[in-house]
Length: 145
Picture 1: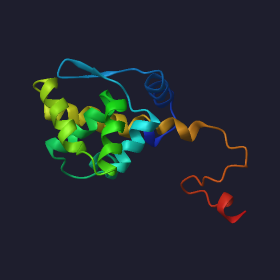
Picture 2 (picture 1 turned 180 degrees about the horizontal axis):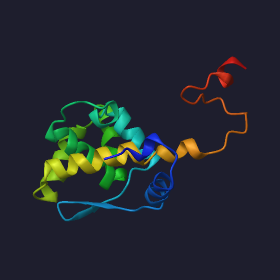
Picture 3 (picture 1 turned 180 degrees about the vertical axis):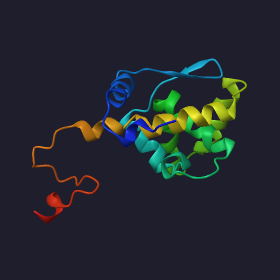
Picture 4 (picture 1 turned 45 degrees about the vertical axis):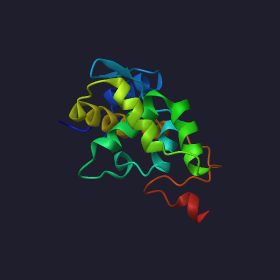
């Protein structure tokens, strides 16, 4: 399979558009929304292996990621409470996962990895007006002034 993110293509733009419009994939019969920026931030806070490209992902880490994607407000509250020393995010995520029912780990892992890879890909299509402080990959002109 050719990675459509490796080239500028109509397929890449179509995929990015569908995801930003809320196109959903299915895990174990349930629709999973694509990550919002808040969900991506929570995955980063949790040091999710889906963001760092880990070779192996534990089922608990997949359940955490699904909890964040499917119940972002509850996940945010749980992370906050954990940071305040008044709860455990992993406990809340696993209790939620138990209520989800049987989850195909391979299917869930594949969907989450897909979402993380493609959901934020459209940001490189935003025109740069030269005032941005963000330096794009392989672009040092903004950093060098």
